[in-house]
Length: 311
Length: 291
Image (tube, rainbow over all chains, first blue to last red):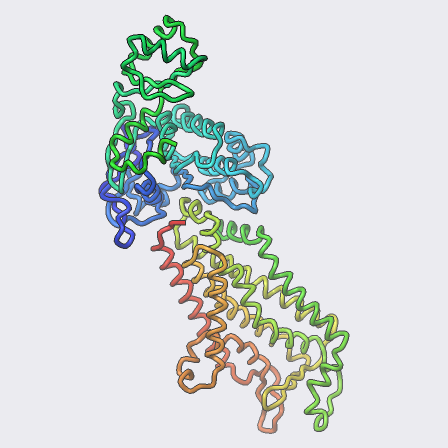
């Protein structure tokens, strides 16, 4: 597998504070690489070092097989990024912003290309409106259009779902999947919404206090025997009663009012489906929930952050 | 590089703030011209009151050349503030808006980025001076006509012939351009250190005011550093309006009394520009973008 990003021994110190500590990881071509960590874990600092916004104190970064320090220009021509908030020129229109950054990326684009980008992120109708009239979600989508306009091979999205409504989050998720599956792009995405990462990432890196905790394929990192399934029935109390008197009683988790939680092995889910029908439970929904979140909380040491991630 | 400069100019001239300076210069000059047109005779009489008993002057004293000179004296002190509004905002404004992040993830070198920004702010500075020249010189020449230029210096008077004046204004405006570019370079340097627009603008003006006070103080201990302060040299555009005289005290047409002073001042100002811009680039190249 061709490596797009190869990071070794990456360290960044701000005075006496070590934000990133001897971090090494690699991202392969076509990966959707989930970058996870608690607030202040060093995700943004690492991403900024990948984009040459921050100078590493030590370590080596290679992108597309080239050293970032010596081949900065060639590398950045193939990279599109949204770093934290997608800040653009508020006094310019969406169209003017995309055109300006396309020019900065070293390419000549015509009106059709720019409008196609705006169409892809759902902003074609507002192309000529100044950005100061845009909502946070629209700015986020514009930031992504700018990141993609020069057709980069690697796309870096730092907290891309910040400030978006549920529809906006789903749109970004679908866009990431489309970029990866249909267009063959490599995507590095960090987010504090772990469920979002879980749905798109093919590989994961989890860092804590600037250090790597674990890196690997997403489907290999989770313990399939610890899958939490959330069941919502027409009558949750009746459903709970029936489940307590069934073979699934031992799988029931501390209950919430709106739904019923069961912990089971992933391969048991089809059987649960069948049994719910047999138990005559009228199911509204049945879905796996927060497996990555649970995994994440297992391996990170700080319990003080649990609330922030589960809200 | 050319593309980068184009982009920076595009950004400058798409911002409403840019035009504040042009509007301010227009308003000030129009008001002064209106005042002098309405009540210029009183002003001229007041100017000449000490000399009226010993000299008889014929012709149009309050002509376009004198009006322009009066305005340059007034305005060139305040124009730095208008220049700082843009130059001191070049980097800090981008950091404040958050656009610095996205700009620097593009395949452009930081040195080129900085040079393009400084060149763009220089173009803005020069255009502001051209605007000032059009309004203060050409419009005044149109409104008030032209004649000999009569200037009162601290201990003598200077009379410049009508045909010997225009080139002096060209020189004075070129000199003013170098002086104002020094202000732009200072603002540009200070903007590297901040992540908001106001700080560097205020800092630029504070430095200018502080150094101007040092330049004008007649305290011996400060005299040693005065030649090295850019503020000492910023007003030397006036040297273009001092003329050499013969032994018979006749003016030598086309001469300047102290050309070496002008050259020295330009060199000092150019050194400051190079120093400020180089420092800005060096600091920025090492700067971590945390905004």
